[in-house]
Length: 327
Image (cartoon, rainbow, N blue to C red; front, side, top):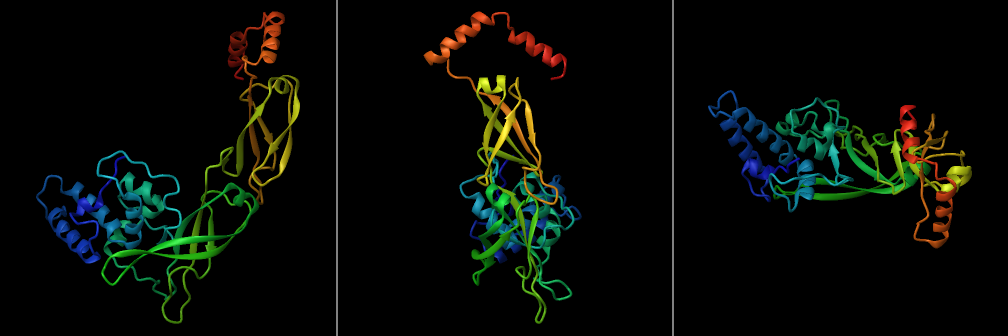
């Protein structure tokens, strides 16, 4: 994926005011709108202009884009770092109709943010619904796996770009105390009532919807409600069977039985030890056999004895037989 320089698309400086961006958009729209333009690539250019304005014409998206785009240039290979948008607060719940935007836009702001952006780029935000209630806001927060398992309360700092009197956007921070229910899955929402946009006089504020994502864990992966991890075992534990400890992210240590003859790649399931919930997930452990180094004289003596006494063992033949059986 290539980086898009939205400022170059509109032909404005990075410190352009909101009014300068609006004027540049209107000028380019008159030039490239397919209904009036004679340019051969008018439709494609108009799509680029619309997307650039959907970002730079919105103080919230512009603030997030500026924070991410420092030091990057148009056309260079680009992948957003994981969790880059944590804590950016955007207006709206993020569930309008899908707009026609590039993969770059969707990778930055998500498909939910891409929905309706073409319309909102041309319309000023009213801040509250027609009925007077405040507009809902949304943001993404990153949790440690430990937080998702145990739940609890944590402080979350959100950044909201706001226009100053000079027409330029600045990031304004606020910190909220958020209760995390135990068993939060990636993509689930935490609703904070009354923490969204202000309502009309005498009307309630909107809500704030926090979309939960989990930071990568060094040992455990999350697959739906299940936890997945490797289970390192010694050769004799795999061959003879054993009960081995499995430290969990929440501090609990499970005792897991490895059956005799377990090979690397075998999956062991511990029911109900994934993410908690009405239907708790499972813990999936994938056996990985670790061999003592042959450079260790003690291990070398055992390997040499096995080579003498088990010389008729053909690992390639056994593996082929397993594959034929579908194992």
